Length: 29
Image (cartoon, helix red, strand yellow):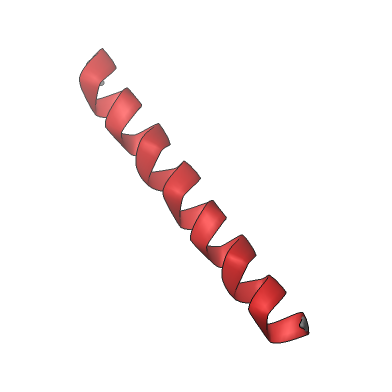
């Protein structure tokens, strides 16, 4: 895999985990 693809994938995963985290907090709140 090229560096740009890895970077984009990391960004996507980070964004997804952040959204999931916020969603979970909303559910627990």
